[in-house]
Amino acid sequence: MGSLWHGFADMGAVTASGPFVVTRGDGTRIYDDKGNEYLDATAGLWFTNIGHGRTEVAEAVAKQLSTIAHYSNFGDFASDVTIELADRVAAIAPVEGSKVMFTLGGSDSVDSAYKLARRYWVEQGKPGKTIAVGRTKAYHGMHAAGTSLAGIPLNAEGYGEIIPDTETVDWDDAKALLGLIERIGADKIAAFFVEPIIGAGGVYLPPDGYLAEVRDICREHDILFIVDEVVTGFGRIGGGAWFASARFDLQPDMITTAKGLTSGYVPMGALIVSPRVAEPFFAGGTWFRHGYTYGGHNASAAAALANLDIIERENLLDGANRLESDLAQALSPLAELDSVAEVRTGLGAVSAVQLADPAKAMAAIGKLREHGVSGRAAGQGALQVSPAFVMTTEEVGELADRFAAALKEL
Image (cartoon, rainbow, N blue to C red; front, side):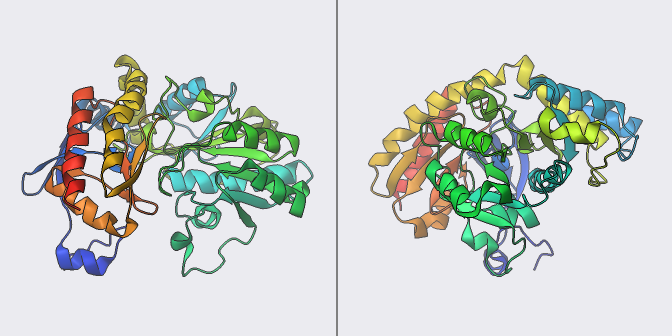
C-alpha cells in the first residue's frame, strides 16, 4: 500500500486498483508510468493554460531560486519579483486601481475574501453585516469559508456546521438572491460569492443576463460582490478577456484567483481587491491581520511572470477564444449519443459532456483512458472539458473523436 492520501478519493478503491501515475507532460498531452500517451482534456485541474513542459517557466523558477527563493511579505518586507507581479496583475485587473494580495491557491483566496469582507464592514461601522451568500452547485475551495459557502452537499457532509454565517441561494435565479435579502435584511449580509461558470459543481454556464442582474442587486443593497475566478481567470473565459469580470463588465469588489496565474507550474493564488474595499486599509492606522508565510512566494511570482509573458507573446487569449467555437463545433454532436444527455459549450475554453446516467461517470473516465484521454467528472455525471489554450483545432477534433469512441462503449 502506498503512503499518499489522495484528495477527493475513495482511498479503498484507489488502493485496490492502484493510482493512475502521470510522469510527464508535453503541450496538450500527458504520459503515464507505462509510457502511454493521453490527450489532457482538463489541463490538469483547469490550470495548465499554456500547456505542459514549458521550460521557460522552469528556467525562471530556477533562476529565482538561485537568487533568493523567498522572503516574508509581512509588515514592510517585500521582494522585487513579487512587487513586479502585483503591478502586472493590477494592470490587467478589470477594476482600475485594484490592490493584489497573494495566497497559495484558490481556497486561500476565498477564505481571504471572506475575512476581508467581514472586516471591511466593521471598518464601515456596520459590524452586523456578517453573512456570506453562496449558490447551489457552487464550489469555492475546501477551506472553512469555502466549504461553508459552497453548494455541493457532499463536500460539506460529515463536518457539521463549520461557519454559521452563510446562506445558499439557487445558482441560476437572481430573484432568489433578492428574496433572501428581503427575508433576512441587507443589513446582515456582507457579501455574495459567484462563479461566472459553475466549475466543479458540473460546468454550468450562467443564464443570459444573470451575472449583471446579481451585480446590480448587490450594488443596490450595499452588499460586496465577490467573483470567484479561480477557474475563469487569466484567459479561460474567452472573448479575448483576462477575466470574466471584464468580459461581462461586472466591476466586482473582489476577485479570487489562482490556477491560470501560474498555469499550475507552482502553487499560487491571488485576491484582487477593488479600491473601494482596499481604501480603509491603505489610509493608515488600520491593520488587516491576515497573510500567509508563502504568500507571494518569490519562485511562484517568477513562474507567474513567465506564464503571463507566454500568454501575451503567443496571443493565447485568442487561443482560448478560438477554443470557444472549436469545442462547440466538435463536441455538440456527442449529444446524439444514447449515453449523453446534454453538451454544454459556448463560453471560453470550458465545456461539459453530461452523461444520461450520472452513475456511469467513473466508468466513463475509465473508457476515456482506454481511448487515450485523461478526463475528469464534475457535479452529477458531467465530463469536464477544459483544455490548454495551445490545443489546436485538429486536436480538439481528435479529442471529440476519442470521446465518441469511449462513450459508445458505455
